[in-house]
Length: 271
Image (cartoon, rainbow, N blue to C red; front, side):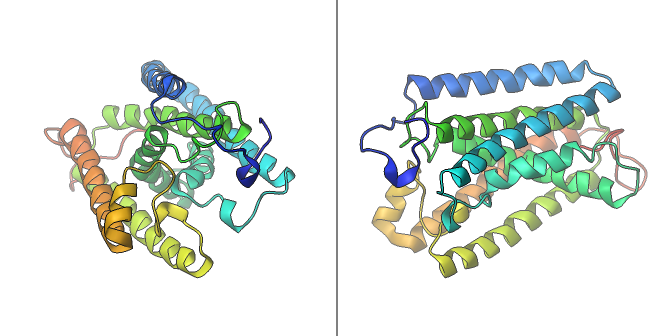
């Protein structure tokens, strides 16, 4: 069962959401995320840069294992490309980690800031949506794809704790908040439009732009209301959750903090 992929799986080998093994994964990654945040707060600048690079490389390693093994099994295809939101994150996390010492004002520093916004907002929201409602639960827990999927999503959450710590420490101004909101909106709107066109042209379902994934809470909406009702519910829910996530950030890290002259206050180390 460990190496079996997709259509080769026998029926009935998967698991239900929130079964004991699923809950153990959730509890372990939540504890690891909180624990890493506490550890990260105690590190100096050099230690943080090293920790970022180690963890970012580990995220990429598990993603590489998932797609590398799939390719070796001869199952890599148009339908298994690493272009889902969470699949993109394992590459973007690596790039974010290795641009953490960029020269101020350089393109690499601006890229680092953009990636930080994308990872902390749609990235973290996406990985926890996937962890809560995994579309790979039809695989047994000891299958390579199940293990690597849980690990890469969970480790992205852990990596996001470092960005959270830096946001909490930063004398963050509204300019930085608006910049990250702009970058997030750009990533989501452009990405969703491209994925919708790609899905319609190829019959795939990246970013779940044509139908809900396995175990999705939107399956009932799709079944009763069709594609239009599903897409509307999906878009509204995603927009609401993103707005709440940004609202939480605003009230915790922006409101009441002294503003930098000119309305911005960049952190000592860019998130």
